[in-house]
Length: 218
Image (cartoon, rainbow, N blue to C red; front, side):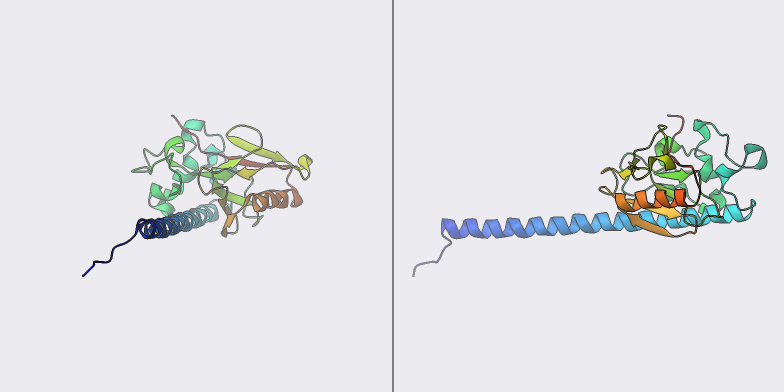
């Protein structure tokens, strides 16, 4: 009795089907991982923004960078102490791991608040214009924002009109980013939404919008 066997063509077809299915599976897994990291980033910024709001409630409704050092704030701190923007509300944050985005492969989580450094351990910028009085102002966001002027202090002026060049690069959320607003809300955004949110600040009467990006001793 003759044994049936695959022909070469049939074997190649089977291999091709398996390869396609494997590719689809890997893509789905990769997409799921990216989505999970985005959700974790949203949660991080949600908790951090709430911690900053709690700190502000105890300090005349001002965020750390809105208060002079002599009044317990971080307004005049040097680059080496930049992380104090977050360290000052560490009682509400508990762990420094929360200021690291899971998609940020260029940084690592700090083991404690004492050794935390903005250059090594922080994934988020702070919106220096953020105020409890203006709920729609940008409070925090992913550091992969580009454009503006001023180096680590990216700045946009209302005189730019419709030519705001703020954008998300591909390094963390594939040309997307997460924003936390002063009202405590957090949203995943595309570049268009980022620019619209900056324009909102100008509509509220602000002349400039400044994002202070992470920096430190290294």
